[in-house]
Every structure is written in structure tokens, then in C-alpha cells.
Length: 139
Image (cartoon, rainbow, N blue to C red; front, top):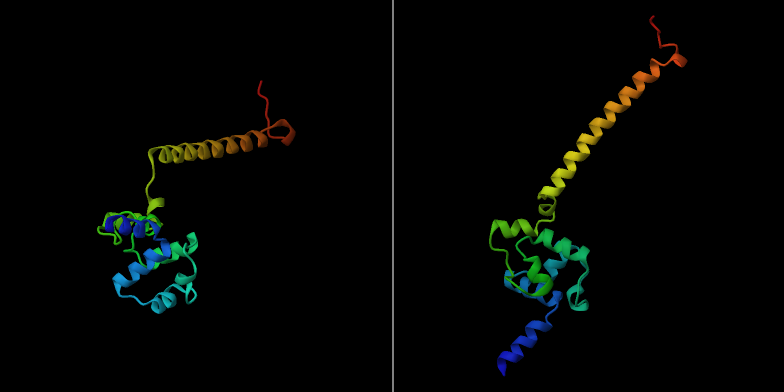
């Protein structure tokens, strides 16, 4: 029966509860947390769930806090490796390019070059047109 009880506690924990657990583990007082994050005093006691903007601020200030654990309670509380830490970094997702994205970028670059060449051709043809006095007939 005690295992069911502990499972219910685990499942019923919300983001604020997990964040308080993290702060206790790290030895960080709530007051210090509020000062560092700029969140209002009592924020963790008032709100069971935290908005994405606040979570982003917290993860940026405490990068060893596992975002996946914070949100859904699964996995390790603390990020253990540099690879895991990189996944917590919001810039990391932008540094990884998929193959299709790279191909798209190449196509866009080629199209820009072709567009530039066509603009130059149009400009050259316009300046050589008979209306502009630039067209000379030979014959």
C-alpha cells in the first residue's frame, strides 16, 4: 500500500513542487531563487504550474536543471552530461540543422544568385534597347 501512496505523490507533483525539490537539493533558498530569477516572492507557493517564459528564465539561470524532468517529472532532476546540458540550451536547437534545411538553404542561395544575374541581364538589355538609344543595327 505504501508504494501506491508514494506513486500518487509522485504523479501529483506539479512544476512548482519539482522546482522546490530542485532548490532543496541544491541548497538554494526560495528568497535567493526569487532574487536571482526576478520572480515575485511567494511565486512558487501560489502557482502550481509555471508559464513557458518563466521556465525559460529558470533554465537559463540553472542550466543543470533537467527541463524534461521539470515539466513532466520523468528522468533525472540534474543534467548529467555535456550532451544533456546542450539539449537544455535554447540555442542548441538552432545550431543543429537537418539535411532538408541545409538543402533548402542551398536552393535559396542558388536562386538568389540566379535572380541577381537575371536582374543584371535585364538592366543590360534595357540600356541597349532602341528606346534608350543604345541599340545599334549593323548591316
